[in-house]
Image 1 (cartoon, rainbow, N blue to C red):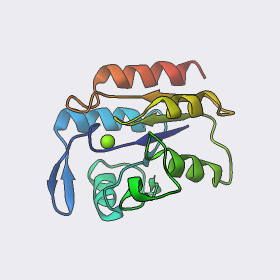
Image 2: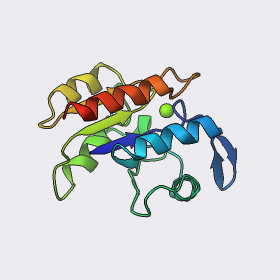
Image 3: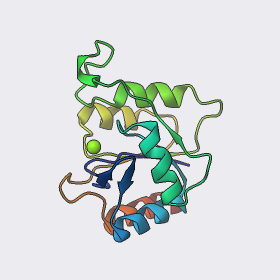
Image 4: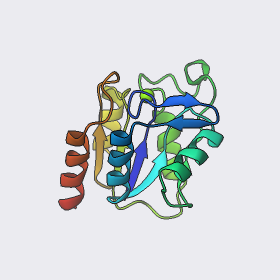
Length: 150
Ligand SMILES: [Mg+2]
């Protein structure tokens, strides 16, 4: 089970280059998620930042990240209302084995992402935090229930 995890608007870290520092409560929520599935960074922060996040949060060394172009909105391949959708769908399609299920947590998920999720051949849950509040324990509870029902 894959958990695609955005950073800004979801984890709302402080940037202390090259680190992104999470509040202790938020770090615990990410560690709860890591107990439910394999986290995949789905953020425009650089691989250096997500490398440090992975290490600081004691996530698996194999934790991957999806690469996004610097200016997603300017790319003609991605006119979508949900800017990351094109690259997320492409990354998933390129996996050697289809995932058992996918959770995508992002503060910017629009109707095109909902349509895409409903059309996936495996259970796909979109979790959409309010960007100023970010990820809450209720969101992690929702992921827990989704995993329990698989
Ligand atoms: Mg975001």
